[in-house]
Amino acid sequence: MQATFLITLPAVLFIVDPIGLVPMFLAMTAHDSPERSRAMAARAVVTAGLVLTFFALFGSFVFRFFGVTLAAFRVAGGLLLMLTALDMLRAQSPATKTSPAEEREGESLEDIAIVPLAMPLIAGPGAIATVMVLMARHGAGVSAGLQVIASIVITMLVTYLCLRSAKTVRRVLKQTGIAILERVFGLILAAIAVQFVFDGGRELLSG
Image (cartoon, rainbow, N blue to C red; front, side, top):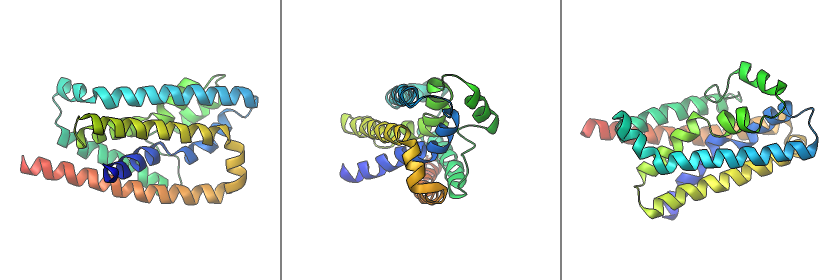
């Protein structure tokens, strides 16, 4: 169970990438007061957490509805994670989360809590696919469910703390430090992505 959690938590944490959200959050809240920025960060992480929990718990129904096998979704999720990981290794904003046009639009919005912060920046396609694959990969038992949900809760807490202290994080780490952490997270995420694709591919071939 501990070994499983050591895979589940990094997978969710690194795909959300709280550190990488800091520069975008600062740009989108440049004209807001600290109190308003913190309030938007809180609403964003709560919304994103609920979205991820919903897909983690009810993702299996999506499989059945569309007739998609778990193995196929593992491969698709792994490829999506790999695209995100490659962007992180290049210290770029993941294109699977948001586009430059969406980021510019977010900077002009008065309230960014739900869109684009909660979705798609925090609970983007990669994060949704990850929690669904993790839930199915470790079985639908209570233990697996608790581990995935606990990983979501911890990730949302870390994300809120990073966004709440965004200016401090950027001042301490500077752009170079953020880029280094992005690359480390991206490398670990790439390894997890390869494992997802390997597991799914092996299951497809054996089936």
